[in-house]
Image 1 (tube, helix red, strand yellow):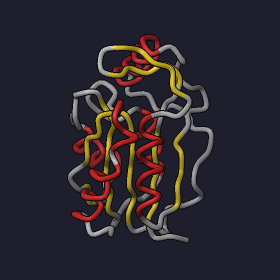
Image 2: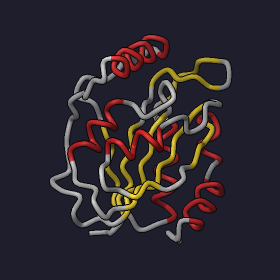
Image 3: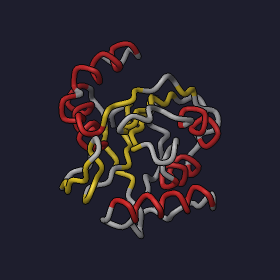
Length: 173
């Protein structure tokens, strides 16, 4: 088993791209996670909700806002048996309402992150990391959460150089 895990939450379907809606088959965060996987030796795990958000973007963000307001923990389709074999978790997610989607909180609260390093990255269309780094520290007790990488979602496919620079700065390459 690799000592690094790339865990990510991503959403396809209708997405917001710099002022317009566009349908995509692969979500921006999944694209960025795949680029990271090309650069480092890591296992990949997709965080998926048992009851996914709507494929309609505006409905999806309303659902995500309600989950955030309710501090919900959506059930996931699957879970890893353990994260004990990993030292570093590269954690990817879209910025929903200034933080991680609540499905990511579900994932993080399930495991013991003591002594582990989390490298967060998020896709967004201008909102940056928001409070997600602070919130990850709250959900992943005991983890060292390093400075994250904000990737413009509509340019995720062109983010390999930025991901490489960030991973290099974090001594992953």
